[in-house]
Amino acid sequence: MSRNTSPRNPRMVYELTVSIAETEPEIWRKLSVPGNCSLSDLHTILQIAFGWEESHLHSFTIGSVEYGEEPEEFFDDRPVHSEHDVYLDDLRLHSKQKFVYLYDFGDSWEHSITVSRIIPAGSEPEPPRCLDGKRAGPLEDSGGSWAYNNMLEILKDPKHEEYTAIYEWAGNFDPEYFNREDVNLRLKKIFWTAKKPAGDSVKAGTVKNKAVKAKTAKAKAAGPVKGPAKTQHKKLYHLMNQIKELAPWEKLCDQDKILLWLPGREEPVLCIVLGHIGECYGICVYPGFESIASYMRMLQGIDENPYFLLGSQNYIMCHLGGRNELLPEERALLKELEISFRGQHDWVYFRRSWPELYPWHINSNDAGLLIETLTQFISAYSRLAGGRVSADFDKGGVLIHEYEEGAWKTRAGNMPPIPVVPPSPGFTDGELDPLRFKEQTAAVLEAGTLYLPMPAGENEEGIPFLERMSLLIDGEKGVIVGQSFLEPDKKRPESLFNMLFDYVEKSGRPKTLKVRDIWEEALFRDFCHKLDIELIHSQGMPQIDEFSQSLSQMLGKL
Picture (cartoon, rainbow, N blue to C red):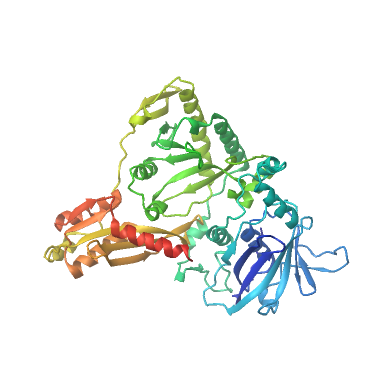
């Protein structure tokens, strides 16, 4: 998908309501598009918004003028103008004006576009956004609106003679599924950085009215880590097909641990099998002690609050899902590699979750690690399934697979100790001296950080940060005594420590401080000891949990 945004700032922002003609119920999206986007850009935006796969020709018809990717003559000799150098700001669009985007001249998917509102652009350029919508876009090559509507009716009737064939072709397709955040993440990946006039610096867009700092020149110069090579993708798909044949989820649950010590790596890799209860099939890979620690905290229920869990996990997920769970570019890659999947829990895709970052695509380094890991996982599990080795998983045992004395050996064992590297305390004794004389109160404070499902800038690899909110709450009164949104370059422990430091200066020493995370416990341990504050590493954080539930309800309405 190409991008041809004008280098100038947009004059206007256009809110467009787009619906696919003759779909029942109607499939629609509401979009916000800056005026410096070309019609070629708008084509890309519509492809992302509706989940199309960029597999067919398209055109725009505005008034009596036709625009397309390449200027050429249509069958009725009407000229087709290039879409690449025509920008929304130049089209003199007006409110309530309608025009048409046609995709796939065979299936003839007609998208009716209405200009709902035109507003002046702000001083800070923003990327295109999806404001609202309903239902999944139609499946590619499903025959047009009549055939698609008929297909949905057949999928409602398992007794229909064509049900099995259509179900196997469509996979686990949910026609009602629509996720605005997923659309906006993909739009952000392509359009996040707006081009500025010559001499101006490039600035990031805004999210939820909160300005995000531009990436540094050094980070831009470094560039993103490359994605996996096609040979890596092909090998990974092959390994996942082998795992599907082994069906390890029939024997293992998500608490049974297979630990791999791979040659050349100082820390182990933990493999967890998902799917034992019939949902969410796949292999979860935790590389290294820090990653394994995130799994252990989740297993022990420490991260049960979803807004803690969202930003604390560190793993690579090998998913087995439905066709509609794959991005268009992933389906296009499968087509290019001539790899075909059919049915529910059969489509393979991969995601990388880093702490404090959105789940994202794997890169070439991740792919290399996965190839090595999945190869040895297959070997270890085959020995377990074949009865050559056993492990007492019910009592916390681990299956260990390691390379020793020129051969791979598999044995039962225990989880090794997981080292915890505490954050630096962030203060000196001299800074603490004035606080020692503050009056001690009966306050019981809860400290923690919530991770919100919205982007807040991106790192040097272009992966969005999760929005982070540090909180300090009086657990007895239910009052927020400290709150801070963290900028992408600000460290979580530093923010929490500064809030507590400020609280003690203004309100005195609390009796108790509760934290949920072992790193936060390490951060505050010396501070609390020297100020005679009871420090509790607690799973129970009722006030923060109540706040996060209210926040969840509010975000669900956006």
